[in-house]
Every structure is written in C-alpha cells, then in structure tokens.
Length: 228
Image (cartoon, rainbow, N blue to C red; front, side, top):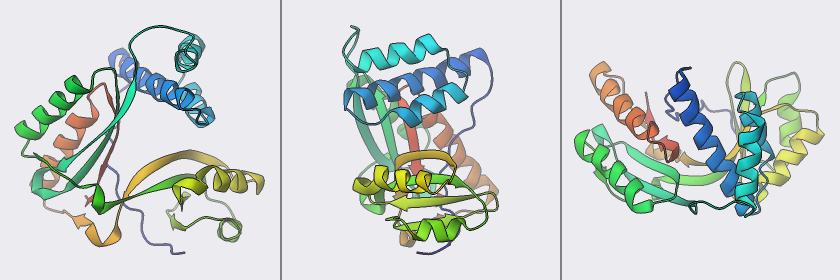
C-alpha cells in the first residue's frame, strides 16, 4: 500500500437553491432506485440522502420504485466516455429513463466545449472507494483488512478495494470502529495516465466542461484523469 497524494475527481459543488437541491435529490433518488433494483446495498446512499435533508417520502418512493412497487419509466445505468479540453480523459456514469436523450445531451456538450467522444475507460480502474475520517492508529487498522491501497489527506484517508471486495472491506473497517464518510464504486484514473494542468485558462476550460456534464440531470458521477 502507499500513501500517494489523492487523485483528482472533479465534481461541481452544487448550490443551495431550490432548483439545485431538487436536482440533487433526483440524482440521489435514481441512484437508490437502481441500487434496490439490482439487489445492491443501498444503505450508504440512503444515509447520504438523509444527510442531504432529502424528504423521507422521496427516499421511500425511490426504494419502492426499485423494488417494483411503483410504476413509471424504467431506469437503467449507462456509461459514456470521451476526451475533454486539453485531451483529458473523461468517464461519465448516468442513470436514465431514455439513453438516447442522455447520449445526445452529452454529445452536445462534447461538441460545444472542445471535447470528443472516444474510448477512455482503459485509462481508469474500476474499484471500491471508501473515505474514512482520519484518526490515530487508522493506518494499522486499514492494513489489517483486504484493502488494496489507500491515500491520505490532512483530514481523511481514502481506501481502495477490488470491486468484489468492496462490501467486505467496508464491513471490516466498520468493525474496527472507523467512521465512513462515503463509500462507492468509482473509476480511478491510473497513476501513469494522470495529466497535470496548471495554466489558469486551460484549467477553466476543463472545469467548465466538467461542470456542464455534471449539471445534466441524468449524470451521477464524472471522472477525469486531469489533476487541476
């Protein structure tokens, strides 16, 4: 394991307006519905929704929809890949009831903001990511689990796992009394593919592009190999 500096995932910080809050709730609801539908553990998502002050009835509706108790449009997961400004690699996770619509919205942004659709997932590794509150003795506790790697920051430690070990490692960490901040499967850019961008104008172009993608209603997560 190593304590190298945390890789960069660019995620636009949502505002607190009703419109932004509503969009965030929709994304959380869709994620919960898909997790329940696919018989995955939705507890972390539900807890995240509660922390975001998502109404209880909306959370329950998302659970019921995933369990097939409610009608409505069928949701499915979709992944889109491409290159953003300055040729940085992008992987996008979406949940949609109309993949054609979502694909066209994403293609429009790539076209308008100097991007190009293309295969990029080979530049990333699918893995579990568990962010923990930093505390004394945490590294020793992590080393005693099936975790693959970890990265430290001043206030937290992020643990990486094989996808198939994700839930097992999360349980092991919790059994050792460690506090989970977030836990999810991610696309982590491979170290050798990271692209450091420091020029302010280029940074702004990439950030604008990533924010535009992230603002789409169907987009759940945006990953990049850019280090800004």
